[in-house]
Image (cartoon, rainbow, N blue to C red; front, top):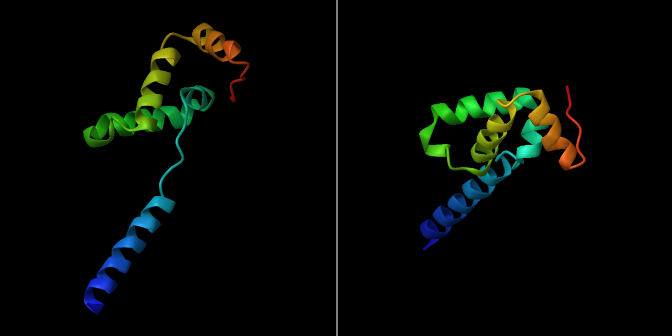
Length: 87
């Protein structure tokens, strides 16, 4: 019985520690405002098929579509939300 408790506590500890190290969820707007991070994340997601459906990969991909349309598209998107781009 003690071995089961130790194993359960170890597993619970590992889960809690991995949750603490998880990156924060970013929005499309955040990635548009932080294009260097967006490019890094988008490239990483493209190279890792198993994480492409995570929230951050999806947001980075959506931001890529807007960014690829150029400065005016970025400005229009951010203006519509009352946001500014960090350059």
